[in-house]
Image (cartoon, rainbow, N blue to C red; front, side, top):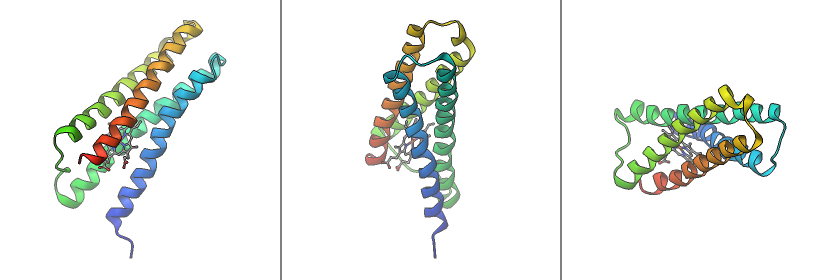
Length: 138
Ligand code: HEM
C-alpha cells in the first residue's frame, strides 16, 4: 500500500523539480540563444514567471504536508534556514523581475532585456545551489 504522505512529497517534488528546470533553463536559453525576437522573449518571460510561481506554491506545499502529518513545520536550523531564506528571496526577486519585464520591456533595447535574463539566470542558479544546502543541512 502506498504511503499517502510519501506520495504527496513525491508529487510535490516532481512539480518543484520542473519549476526549477523552468526558471533556470528558460533564462539560460534566452541568454545563450540571444538575441531572440521580442515576442518570443515575452513568451519566455511568462514561462519563467510561472516557473517562479510554481516554486513558491510547491515549496509551500512541502511545508503544508509536513504540518498536516506532524502538526509542525520541519525543525531546521542554521545553514538550512539560511538556504531556505535565500530561496525565498530569489523567488520573490524572480517574480518581481518578470513582472517588471512584462510591464516595461516593450520599449527596451536588446541590451536591457539581456541584463534582465542575466539577473533571472543568476537568481535561478542561486536558488538551485541553495536547494542543495537546504537538502543536506536539514
Ligand atoms: C518560496 C520558495 C521555495 C520554497 C519555500 C522551497 C522549499 C523547498 C523545500 C521545503 C524543499 C524540500 C527540502 C528537503 O528535501 O529537505 C525543497 C527542495 C528543493 N527545492 Fe525548493 N523551495 C523554494 C524555491 C526553490 C527554487 C526557486 C528552486 C530552484 C530554482 C528550488 C529548488 C529545489 C530543489 C532542486 C529541491 C530538491 C533538493 C533535493 O532534494 O536534493 N526551490 N524546496
